[in-house]
Amino acid sequence: MEQKGTPLSLGTDNIWHLLLLYAIPSVIAMTASSLYNIIDSIFIGQGVGALAISGLAITFPLMNLSAAFGSLVGVGASTLISLRLGQKDYSSANSILGNVFVLNTIFGLIYTVIVLLFLDPILFFFGASNDTIPYAREYMIVISLGNVITHLYFGLNAMLRATGNPKKSMYTTICSVIINIILAPVFIYGFGWGIRGAALATIIAQTSMLIWQIKIFSNKGSFIHLQKGIFKLKRRIVSDSLSIGMAPFMMNAAACVIIVLINKGLVKYGSDLHVGAYGIINRMAFLFGMIVMGLNQGMQPIAGYNFGAKQIGRVNKVLKYTIVMATGVMTVGFLISELFPHVVASIFTKDQTLIDLAVPGLRIVFMSFPIIGFQMVTSNLFQSIGMAKQAIFMSLSRQVIFLLPCLLILPQFLGVKGVWYSLPVADLLSSVIAAYMLAAQYRKSVIKG
View (cartoon, rainbow, N blue to C red):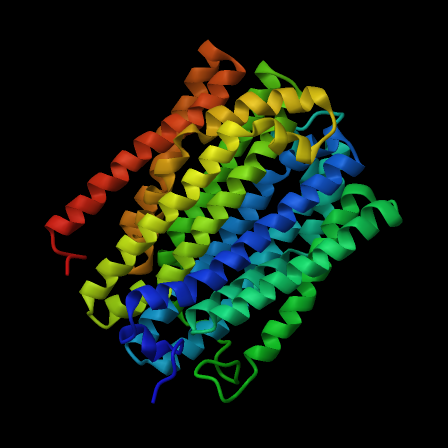
């Protein structure tokens, strides 16, 4: 008999129970992942200074670009492997695992070389000043040198979730967070390494867990495992993985451009400390966004497997449940940021000027959060069932079609507030588009069951 949580049970077990089984570990893992980014920011803000938070915020576009290449491989391949498991094509699924390993290594190396060769010009282009670039440079040198490890770590974690091991994926992330939280204050305060210590703690934590992931996938008794013959790149696997992964890649790449515009707008109409304020807001938004991403990761293998198995009614159910949960999560974020913005900002810094700049930004940026969950889940659905074009369009609608024009126009009339207001306006408009596209698919009976 097939045990609960194994790939085949995705097509038979109760949908609600499956979503909880897969989503809870993913949510815990994603929350933990975002928490160590937040904790790093807190250690840096409290232990290094307000300008260090601004320097860290300058690196966000590069971090998004790295995540873009990671998701191009990891998300696309995890979706593809779920579809192949639904079709019981285990040979192809194993080849996908091997191709993920090779592709992440190639993309990681290319990224590292380019970033290190042109680091200072990139950081100045992203909005760094003479006051903030020392912090940004120190952080990114370490992060870039460990980029291959980061790509492999996140790629194999995606494989763990997609192959019926959500708890192991969760444990991997939690252990990485614990190691990072232990090492970061030791490196920052004890050794006096400052912002560089925070980056080093992150890479060491990911390296430790990557070793464990490789050990897990070396188990020959598993459905999917590392073996000879799976590391040769196959054109079909590479093409399909990159096609499906193009949606999150474009979303993260667009986010890179958007963050650059935000940083430049804040420096132009405000100051370096306004960039630090955005660093605080971004970390809070990232926390709740990552929780919804955890829900999406829980939904992805269920939706992908059942779509591959042509059980469309089950796809429909998991979509509804995930939308309700995501909306609840984002509403909590909205209430915290609207009611307690001073408390949130003061966690990151003692600098009163920075706190005063972050408070209005928090209230404005989070005002549209209750509707964002719906848009994120709907976009993920199209990605999960292999509808790459729809997923790419939905991912880009917020960033490029709406947010980009807002960032170019509104600050000219509203100054810094125009930068802040651009975000909720784009959220509202992109959610309308998501509702229209989902309704259109129901009318076509593509996901109706």
